[in-house]
Length: 263
Image (cartoon, rainbow, N blue to C red; front, top):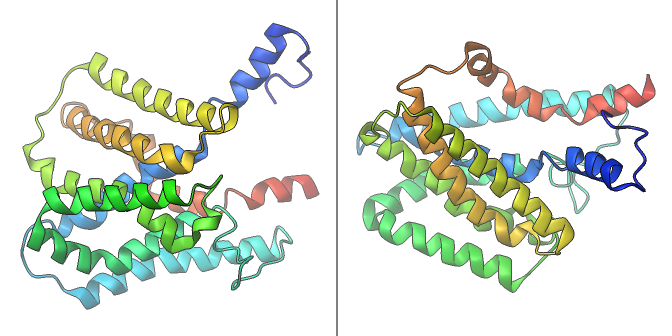
């Protein structure tokens, strides 16, 4: 609403309104999250030690499902939103929860992916997943993720999640960085890549289903540089503490808009 009421028939008004509304693009933010997710899941198991698969599944699904049930309660009883859990119109797929379905698939497949990484290595596993994901996204070219379904989408984005796993194994060898210029360069490169994906998607009809994997590679290098810079300078405590509640915030960031309309 910052430029609400601006005259969009003028160049200045149109630039302000549309420029402001295009600063943030949600889908690349989710892709950055996938890199972080792969990093966090693989970090405790990046060494070839004991892997308690039962404990792993219990921790992962407790962590993701309990807050998810709470968010569905909010959607149903506070926002007045009708919910269909199963079928083609399931809210688990036709909402911001689509990314959690992909996460569920990655969590379930992680023990197998870890085994494959140990057997064939990243030099084989990563190219295979990139080739498979690219083939699916190009062969079945679509405007958004819905035609691919949860498993197709998860396959397309799998190499991005695995880049996070790779980063977990590289973290001990990362050299601390003291360069403020370097970290802000990567931050702006990542934001710029996000904006380019948005413009290609909405202006040139080159949809993010094909470009977002490339953005994921940029996000991988950005997060790697954030880790290097974080070894030199601790991040802002307020933003760090936000990690404790960011998942819950993501789960319910849709219903408040509907609640606001009712009020």
